[in-house]
Image 1 (cartoon, rainbow, N blue to C red):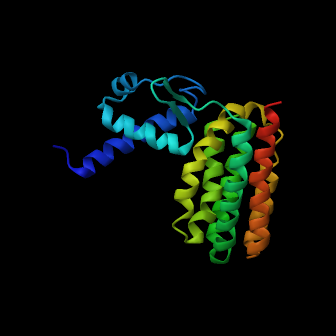
Image 2: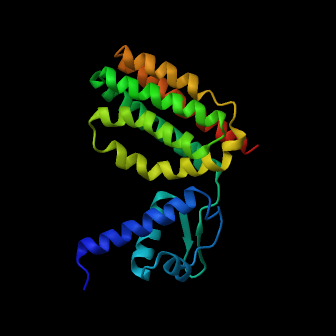
Length: 215
């Protein structure tokens, strides 16, 4: 019999692998998911795989119709419009809480992350761009000291990252580099309200660009 912690590790392994496959596009929007194939791919039994799929359904990345199908959630324009304001509000709260606690070293990390982000955009390197963007916003999330923000964002970030990957080629004109510079300036000035406002605008503008890409 497996110990509870072993079962948790297997569930987490299945969840992470399937989530990555969906976000990266290996499993495409609308693609049918079969337990047996996932079990063979992951080398796991059906229990952790099914647990992972249930969790991914809560995240909005998988949908099921009993006795009919389990599939990757198709792209839904309405869901995009519903998700981005929530993500923007949570990141804005992180900025408001975190800005007063930033040091010069924190600000420099944000500048360096934005420089990497700009280089990745110019090179059309989606992986590097998303990693740099995460590193940029992670500074404020960590500085906020609020342990509930990251888990709340984790449930939504997969949807956004999947969209960014799928629409990356249609977002060359996004103004995020300039917006990031403005966020850094406000954060360096220890202005929490201005930083929060700019962070919110940054996420909402990305949502608008992705929404328009459906046209």
